Image (cartoon, rainbow, N blue to C red; front, top):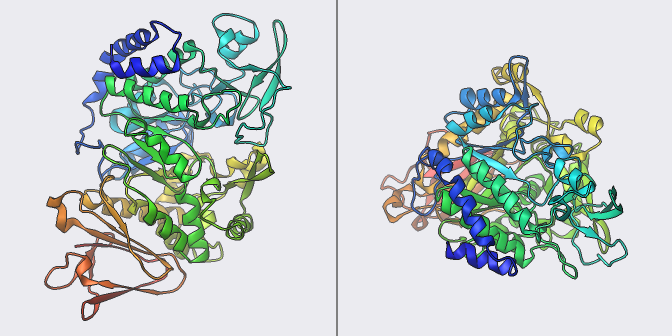
Length: 581
C-alpha cells in the first residue's frame, strides 16, 4: 500500500474501507503496459523531463483532412514531414467519440472516434512524439451510455451523476457559462434535475461516489498505457460539488489532483500532469500545490496581456505581470501559450488591466472580426472570452502580408522566450486567420479558431513562399530552431524581466546551471510599429572582450553602440533579437 494514496483516499472518502487498495490494484494492473513506453523518451534534467528542445503542438485530430486516409494519419504526416526538427510533442484534443463541444462531451472514453481514426493511429503519433491527452473528468456526454443507463435507473450508474433540487439556492456557485446550472431530464422514475455546469449535453460526474473515481482512474491509466506522456485535466477547478460552496477550487478537488499525480508517479515517474484552470493567476498557480499537484499549469494571463501589448504598442502591463512571476519550484513550470482551441480568456486580466483597457481590447477584437462570449455572475453577464484567431487579433489586416507575418511572429517570439514549455496552437503555426464560415455554420463563437483544412491545399500554401501561411510557418520554424538546444531556454531556466522602453518586452534567460554561464540569452522584442532603442548596462551580461554578440534567430553578429559602460541597440518595427553571450 502506498502511504500517499491511502492518506488522500481516506481524506476524501473516509467511510470507504478498502478503496485505497482498489486504487492500488489499478496501479498494478497498468504498471506493466505503461513500462513498455517509459524509456521511449529520455529525461535530460533530473528535476524536469523536458528541455529547450521541446515544444508541444496543440491540435484537433481532424484539423487536416484528405481522401487517402483518416484525419489522424494526415496529422501524423504533417508532424513527420513538416515538424520533425521543431515539434517534439503533440496535444491531440479529445479524440474519443463525442456528441457536442468539439470533443469535450465524451461518449466513450475508451475508444477513438472512428471519424478520426483508431488507437493504432494514436499510438503511431505517441511512438515518435510526446503525446498529450485530455482527461475530460468533470463531465461526460448526456448521450453516452453512462448517462443513458442513469436515466434507465440502472446500477451502478444511478450514482454517477448529481441530482439536485431546483428550488435550492445556488447563488454561490461560480459559473463558467451563461447557461442554467441544472437541466431537467426524464428518468425511469420521473423528472430529475441534474447538475450540468457547462451545457445540457455535458453532465457533471459525481466525484463523491468512489465508483466514479475508480472509473476515471482506469481511463487515466489507460491513456498512459497507450503511450500518453502528458495528461491534461480538463476544467479541473469545477470538479467537486458541495452545497454552500462556490464549487470552484474545492479542497477535495486539490486532493484529487494530488491523487492523480501520485498514481501517475507510481506507474511512470517521467510522465507529466497539467491542469487547465482559466482563472486569475493566483488561483491558477495554486494547482502546483506544494510540489505535489500539477507539474505544469497553463499561463492563462499571457495571451490577453500579450494581445494588449501588441495592439497598443505598450508592454507595461505584460512586463509588470511577467516580472511578478515566481519560480514554481523544482519539477514544476508553466505551459506557455498564446492561442488554443478555446478563446482568449479575460478573467486573468482582472486586477491587471483597467476596465477601460479591457473594453479597448474587446473593441479591437470586434473590429478585427472576432466574437465575445459571456458568462453568468451574481452581477449579471460579463465578458468572459475573446473568440478570434490570434493572428487576426494581433495584426493589422491592412498591412502587407510580410509585415503582418513579422508582427505576429514578434508575439510568438515573446511566448517562446518565457520560462516554461511552449504550447503552439496549430493555426498559429500555419498562419491561419478567422474562420468566419465555421461560426456561421455552427453558431458557436469558438469555431472561429477551429478551421478544418484540406491537407493538399495546406501543402500548396506552405510551399508557396508568397503566401502568409508560408511566411508565418517558416518564420515560426526559424524561432523554434533558434530556441532548441540553448540551455538558457530550458523550461526551468531562470528569467529576469528587464526594464526598457515601454514598447519593448525584454527578458534575460539563464543560465540553467553554473556551467552554462556563457549561455545567457537576452531576448528583446519590439511590439511597436516604429523603431525603438534599447539601452542597458554592460555589467549585467557576460560580454566577450570584443563586445559583440550573436542573434540566435538569424545567426548574424550584432555590434551595439557603446557609450562608456552603456550599450544601445536599435530595433526595427516588430524586430526580435535573441542575443547569446
